[in-house]
Length: 318
Image (cartoon, rainbow, N blue to C red; front, side, top):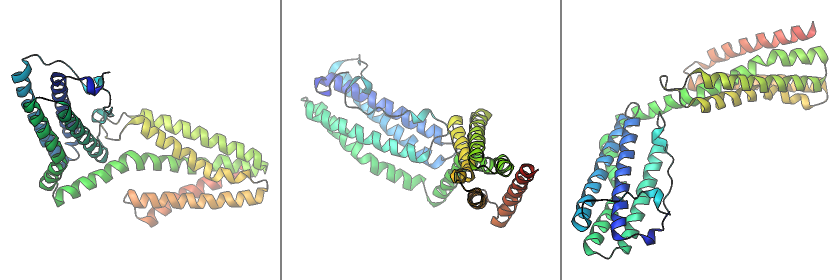
């Protein structure tokens, strides 16, 4: 990698052309990735891509008038000081907040590049163009805001916010809720069967830990391998699997950890209280995010949990 101070005016212009071309293509990729779920925001990025492409055209005209037809390939990764941006434009579906934050960082970086390049150039024509482009990059935030005002009217913002909520539910809440329900309910039977069969808190703790960790690993892999999210829009499979596995293990560990207490009655009473809290939390999440009435969610979750709980006690007491 070369230092920016080592670049000639010819190389600075070549780098500026490469930056504008890369930024234009990235904005176009943002627009393409957002188009299905966030069409109004996608239009903003289409217009920003077009503006960056116009900057590239002007730079190429100046370069040809000063240095001829051949433009050397100099990219941001060839020069020290540039940020290596995460390639989020390759991920589908795109997250709106992350895209907007990275676009803002790209504009700030390009503006600083033009300001420094202008200070380093000696040719009057090059200095003028670089100064104009630096001013244009400073205006890009205002341009983005104006484009947002045009394309992101009240109705469009409402639609995009609803889409964002739906994607959050689909990619985070649903796998997390599935894991929490499985961990909280499926581990009840082995835990309380072990508790009432042995009346030994240490043995019960080991059974609960094994059941919780095992269920977390199993559910995590099952969710990650169920689909890649390309057709369902459920997001990255391994992130979804990690959420499901972690919440499954957490659901089981909640009523397992009270058995670190040596007294069986105290540990069991505390574990039952934790079960009640877990079932209430599951019912609340279903009511909050899954459009289920709270009383109906409570009935469905509590009845299922009580059946499994009773089964564990009956088996352990047999």
